[in-house]
Length: 146
Image (cartoon, rainbow, N blue to C red; front, side):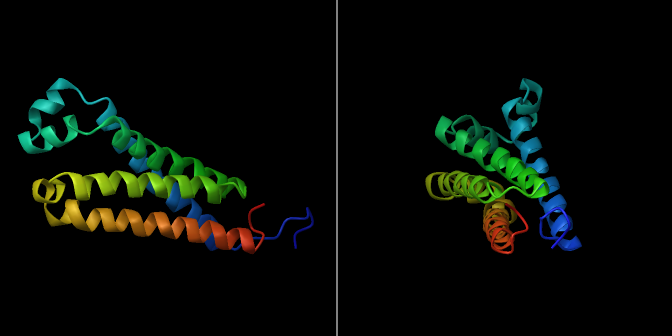
């Protein structure tokens, strides 16, 4: 136990939290890129991808926002050692599941984007989302966050 009453956390906790924040910031940049896409950018996109993007319902876009901004906020909470990180990361995971559920089951995204972006990347996103919730839960049990 540290002198200030908080449990000392291992260095790898900080490394994981920082890498996770960077990962989620990249996701936030992707969200902003989609939210503020210009007509010129749209003109450069393949027609099938543009159709998928333009036909995405508001609730799926909102799920994307919850996924990325929840991930960013949750990772900041991990770095601040706040126990609410777990709840925020759970909201982020829910956003991931809703967004990817829409893409996978209600669109032809796999056909349009191919296996790497249409199948592998969603699996990676889910694994990382679940991993961050498990990480926060473990940190809470070990009193690394409070």
